[in-house]
Length: 153
Image 1 (spheres, helix red, strand yellow):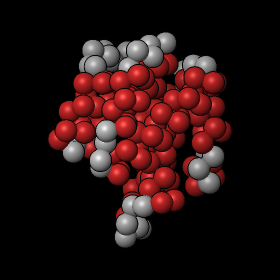
Image 2 (image 1 turned 90 degrees about the vertical axis):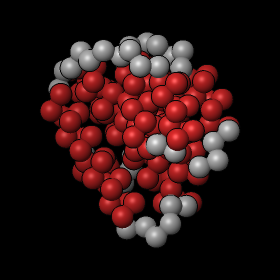
Image 3 (image 1 turned 45 degrees about the horizontal axis):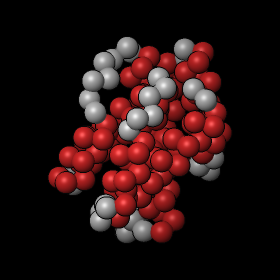
């Protein structure tokens, strides 16, 4: 998994996460999420500006990290009562990266459970985001979600 993360082979990472979820391999998902977070932190810390390819890489790593945490949330049988669209609105309005992350984690878990009702709201909100980092993360997340839908949780 180390090489997949370093090379950011998105579809292979998604496939590995989904297969681990289906197999009930919580440790593998947790390990992968940790790797993704470490690589995200490294990418951001080594950059003077988050633009272009660096922004895309950081955004994709964060989106995959949120997917991993969403899978872990499902495996822990945590309640999914929060509305990811509303969390996203709050995150965008407040410039709150923590709320953005919580929104994406919840949305990932809902997708795996078969609930795609939030996708339209996310697509609409993406258009109005002025914060380049938030827009990048959300766009990358939507790309990851499309790949997850193709694999089928």
